[in-house]
Length: 249
Ligand code: G
Ligand code: G
Ligand code: MN
Ligand code: NA
Image (cartoon, rainbow, N blue to C red; front, side, top):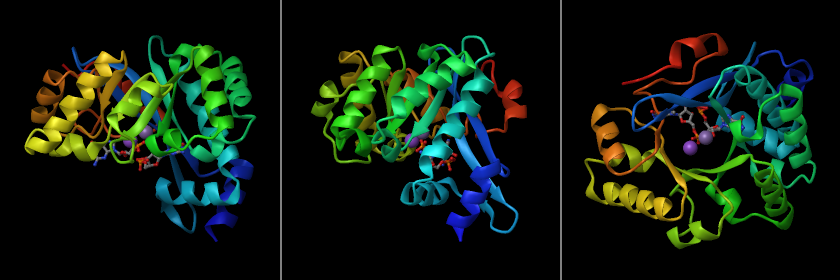
């Protein structure tokens, strides 16, 4: 039933929406980016959680359409906002389609967003299990200036030593580690280790799921470059963007 409803929704984009959550520079609290988060409200099914409809879209081959809709919507919305980048989540299934890189580059042209202002968030599992088509497309997009970030880092099975071989610019430390640090010593140690290694490899580090000032202070001290979480703002609809950009000193 979700599949039928999703097909119908994608045909006219009704009920589909894109929310935006700020990414804050750890050093001074300036908002430097916005992560696009897909939302879907169906008249009968109500609010369907993204993990659920994205899984359905992946299984049914609808993810290409859905992903392109989110990408175009988010790029168009953020392009006119000076000095802010947009981060868009990309599923492993999208990357295995050989047309993906072309689609991204076309959307950038259409929306007049400079490639450097787009960041594609790929999960750790997708990158580690990347096939040739995926690897090739990620290289091409990076060579055009698009940034790649490794989402939910720490939840997969990759090792820290693998980081140096991956074609990525940024690592997003999963919120499960962020939220246990600074209270739990082992999580704090993981955050410090990832942050130090990433710095040594020239990668930026983002901490996700920051909810308290105590976490913020710890993460800044641990060397994270960017912070994201409810402490600053949850995802907001596009009308709310003006209210969440600016600074969180
Ligand atoms: O707020 P949140 O519930 O939006 O997101 C839940 C999960 O869904 C996260 O892992 C997030 O990365 C994923 N997600 C949200 N929007 C998109 C999207 O447009 N595409 C993909 N592939 N994943 C998304
Ligand atoms: O996997 P991904 O990082 O794309 O997931 C984004 C998800 O994390 C979204 O569902 C978003 O609503 C959620 N999220 C963002 N900030 C916080 C936070 O501070 N705490 C919690 N619990 N969830 C968050
Ligand atoms: Mn993400
Ligand atoms: Na994440």
